[in-house]
Length: 227
Image 1: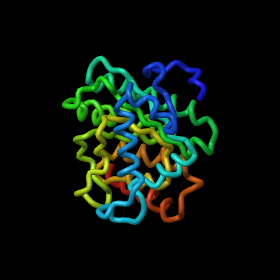
Image 2 (image 1 turned 120 degrees about the vertical axis):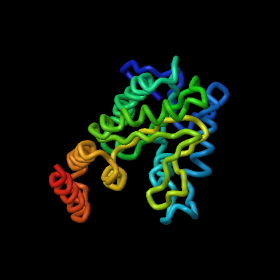
Image 3 (image 1 turned 60 degrees about the vertical axis):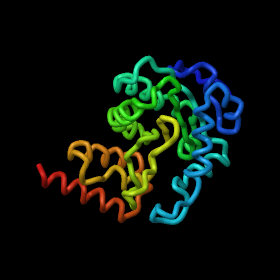
Image 4 (image 1 turned 180 degrees about the horizontal axis):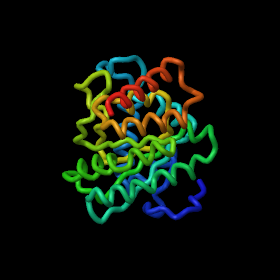
């Protein structure tokens, strides 16, 4: 796999595809933790999920196509500022790695932080995600926040903590029409909610069903009426 042309703040030699990740398990044990979790949980159905199919239906196809990449980023602090700085570089890295429409839609990038103390992972990952999410959605991407103590639950089952991963991690993938259920949430501040809907419509408007377009327009109307 050719190295990226643009310099990014990841650990030299850490970028790999999932097929070759085991060769780096000694250097980055987080890779082994993440891949074991992907195989045992993410790509499997779960009785408490509230729907059929895998926890993440996208991951198994991405693995079969060898479109899953892993990278490690070194950190000096556990601050939200550093999470925003290091995590923010992942958008450009994703766009460079998956530079055609097909791989962009199907790929996945998982970034681990080997120097991050476990007891500070929640502040770093959750705080960084809150800071980064809008910028990623504006670029047609979703960034997910994963760590051992995540309190994020399944949309259909608030008792299932779907973002609990043994290693602190950001995961990046392309925005999809199904992200409407994550981006159009009543508890989201109105200004942010409106921006999410605009970005979703911009990137995926031609892929949305009539029902999904109606939901977005209803969301705009609700937000306008609340002003």
